[in-house]
Amino acid sequence: DAGVTQSPTHLIKTRGQQVTLRCSPKSGHDTVSWYQQALGQGPQFIFQYYEEEERQRGNFPDRFSGHQFPNYSSELNVNALLLGDSALYLCASSLTDTDTQYFGPGTRLTVL
Amino acid sequence: GEDVEQSLFLSVREGDSSVINCTYTDSSSTYLYWYKQEPGAGLQLLTYIFSNMDMKQDQRLTVLLNKKDKHLSLRIADTQTGDSAIYFCAETSGTYKYIFGTGTRLKVLA
Image 1 (cartoon, each protein chain N blue to C red):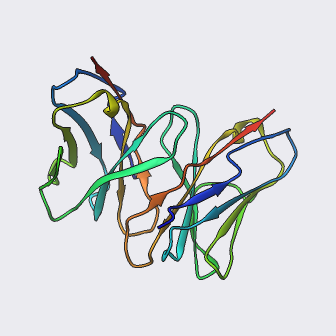
Image 2: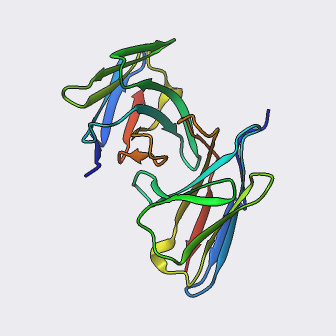
């Protein structure tokens, strides 16, 4: 039973560029959440997708956007990258109407 | 507002018990979780407790919840060097998002 997978593992971008991160949920899960974890901090909620719609959003600017596909996989897009966007981006999946989220290994984004 | 606090560091000797503490502010929390993060890795779910429980035991792990004081603890019995990691508590009030603490770095001395 495959767990949550994310790609790529690492990514290096420069300021002003755009980036797309990908997530495949755990088998049987239909809900995907994205979190940003800055160095030395706990994860911060970005948004959650269910039925291809953004269901809830945290305190992140519109530069952060996402998408969920019919197969429940998801993308996180960040436009106009800033140095402060450097972080580990974590995807978590869950089955709707249950609260337990299972996390992937993350994508480490470095913005130079 | 929603806030979760943890102490930053804990050091224990191998074979001893570890107790990691967490306090939260949201009185409407429904589930509280403990996750483990090893260097460069994602979060591994260890255990969780529903807010109407006050204790849950799962092998070497014991979770205690004091809802009145909004205090959660994770006890690891017979701590091993492989338990060295950062431990996060998180709470949710059914609004889909998790609120995480800043993590407690556990160091196990051989």
